[in-house]
Length: 281
Image (cartoon, rainbow, N blue to C red):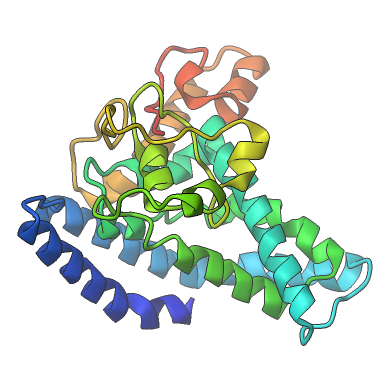
């Protein structure tokens, strides 16, 4: 978490470079109020992270200490490579469920609210995602990945994704076929019908190709960003919690346990009560 704080000056500097380059190219990709909303969400996410760090790391350490099949050495580069690939694979599923399951979407929706796509969008992060996302990474603890290695590769995966939130870098040839890239991630944030709920990979886009969720960006179909139903606010409280409030409202009017389960675990846009949460891509 401290590494993210230390990286903030670098993030801000790169955002300034992106802004200046965009102006020079006649392609300003920033709106002040939107960027402030993203930065505010990022600050709230970091504050909440102080309180959820013990939960996430504590559970991982507990599972590692009690259930690790064979504790792996932290000084072996092969363990680090395995851990990074394993983390990215599990991140793919965490990210995918974040779009396909109403309970997880309530947290992840924050990242998709912006109708602009720039480096500030990368900082628009959830304040509540850590409450459930730790579940996906327990296989790494059971496999024996040391907690320090787990934390490090998780940070690498997160930091990598900062640079792919930009419109100013075009397609990158072979790189786009293997890795998450600006082109691939623009698709992920697009709300065009063709692009919805695609390209979940964090570092590798190979997972999307393997599991059928990859779509290539088309030059003749520019991405539209945000939510299918725009949020239309930069209020930090609404940014962080509006989807949770919708979920609670839907649950409060559920008429059966089946409806409750459908609200929590079903796709957010197909809730049986018709309230319909916004989808993103």
